[in-house]
Length: 325
Image (cartoon, rainbow, N blue to C red; front, side, top):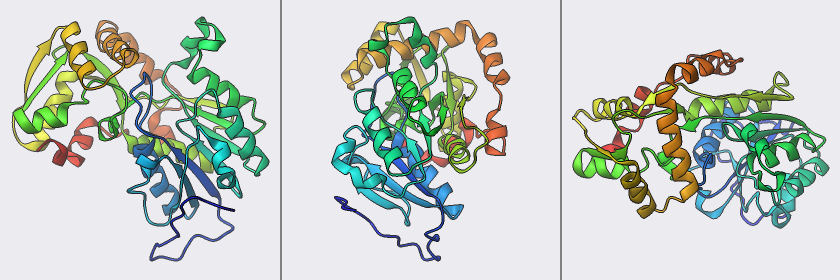
């Protein structure tokens, strides 16, 4: 098996046995397109959890995602979007955490995984891909990836998360909150559309990783779609959580939607990512009770899947207070 770059197991504890399951995780560069999750942020948490359980972990990561993986990971530079360039990465794998796949090449990646003996695929999808069914199949993205996984001949589970709290660490979707580390550090101020009355659902990356670990390590959720969704959070509450974590008041400036759009465009956000962010901030505020109840009604719940109460934005802000000081 020939890899472009491999980092050997360097943990001080005994290495996992060769009989332990081998999980392949994929990570891609940050994407600002609507619905994208931070594959590196989630993947690193997932790798730690799998290693702690005694399993083996191999990672196929794009160049910008090669750093900061836990010791013990077998690290390979490459991309799940160009699977033919790293055919050997699939050898010996039992499961695949498919994060960052794209419709054009996902079938090729899945075929290579199946031929190499992988038996299960867990897809990092997006919240709400079922809405793509209203449009022609050639326009599908998340739904195209899910359908390809379902047709792969392997066991499968789809995870459809809400926005990830740690998206700001990687610069992935959503746009809301993406410039807060800079403006809070520099001015103790947040300027954003719907900052006073917007809502957006978030899940902690540790919880999302725990859902993925459960789906990879057990057969309990084969053939299931798991809605790993956190509750709608008020933008104002998120700002106040950060203020408490850093011990100072953070001022807010409520921008008109078009002014907010212009500010995000200047920071490189594409229109689709901006459109969905603005829509969701407004829609969750207008339908708050209905959408909050939808979250509460999901089964299994996040707590069922992780074995503990869902982590809060207060916890996330405390953990990452250094970003805003």
